Every structure is written in C-alpha cells, then in structure tokens.
Amino acid sequence: GAVVSQHPSWVICKSGTSVKIECRSLDFQATTMFWYRQFPKQSLMLMATSNEGSKATYEQGVEKDKFLINHASLTLSTLTVTSAHPEDSSFYICSAPDSLWGNNEQFFGPGTRLTVL
Amino acid sequence: GQQLNQSPQSMFIQEGEDVSMNCTSSSIFNTWLWYKQDPGEGPVLLIALYKAGELTSNGRLTAQFGITRKDSFLNISASIPSDVGIYFCAGVHGSSNTGKLIFGQGTTLQVKP
Image (tube, rainbow over all chains, first blue to last red; front, side):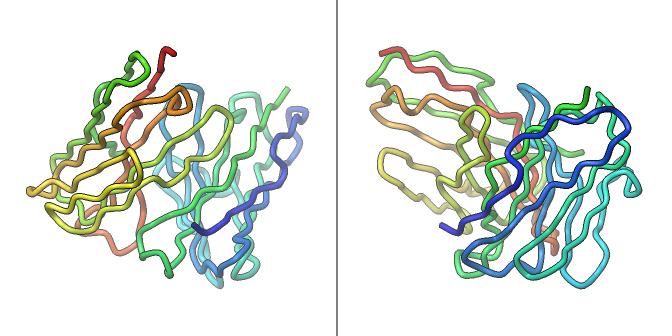
C-alpha cells in the first residue's frame, strides 16, 4: 500500500506553546489529507480535511484558529496546534487516499503523540 | 460525530480459534474498510470492500460487504498471537462526495498462546 509518514513521532511541550506536526505522502500525491485525533482507548475522530490549494474544512466542534492546517504541496500537510493546553494532549494521526488503490482507501501515518505539560 | 456500531468491544480468545466481528449502520455505506491498529501506531488497512455482497480475503482474514449496504463483518481464522490489536471498521457514507471515513468504536483482540 501507499506510505504516509508523520513527524515528529512524539513531542512534549509546555502549555501555551505551539506545535507543528507534518504529514507526508511518500510515494504518491495527495490533494486531500485528513487529520484525526485519538484519545486513549477510543476510536479515531476526524478533525479536519486538508485540501491542497484551498482552505481546510473542519468538523463541527473543532476550532480552526486553534488547529491550523496548511496543505503546502501535493505531498505535505501540516497541523499546528496553537497555544497548546494539557487537554490537547492526544494522539494525532493523518491519512491520505491514494487514487491508484481506490478512491476511498485511506492510508494512515504512524501518528504523533502530543503531551502538553 | 457519527460512528458505526462495532461489536464486540473486546475479545479474549485462545490461539488457534476463529474470530468474528461486525459493524452496523442505520444508513447506507458505499465503502467498507477494515483496519488494524497496534499500540502507539497508526491504523493499517487490511481489507477494502466496494460492492454489496462482496466477500474478500487477505490471508487468514475474510470480510464481507453486507447485502443491505448497512453492515460488514471481519473474520480471522486460526488466530495467532500477532493478531493482537484493535480492529476498526470504517465506512464512507453512501451520500458522501468527500471520502471522509466514519469509524466504528473498535474491537480489542487479545490472543492467549
């Protein structure tokens, strides 16, 4: 299957700082990428859809000014958690569909563990 | 947000046993996907289903797209210790043009050697 990477794999930051997470499609181009958040022992919850060349679309209840998304190129999307607080601590995962495998098959990155102190 | 109803929530089985889990929805889906997630990692795609009634295998895994398009099941035959993990169903809503996935709550599988 297609390969998606994330960086960093984990990050610890102080409350009030901003953290940037990168998501890259390594062997395919992705005009759309998706960002999820997963709390312990829970399922994945979609936060937003990242669109190359246009604004991201956010799910209900997700603050767009707090979770900034930039789809800089056909292989890179970034999620910036601004003014992070302890309640933002979570596992953040991105995914991207590879059209060669089927329009709806999404491939996930390895995730980024964010801990806000 | 909307979630699929996935069951069972957890299973603890003996190595060599077969496993079955399923997902249901009150609305129609046009794609069903099954993923496995190991601790601290992202989900890995196991099987993708696109047609009602479709039965697809991947090694010891078999999944089916329900005829009504409102359910899917995943079977694992002759389980082994490395099958341990969380299995998620995910679907794309029948009316969706965004490709957004809706996830089930997950089934945690533990295998006793």
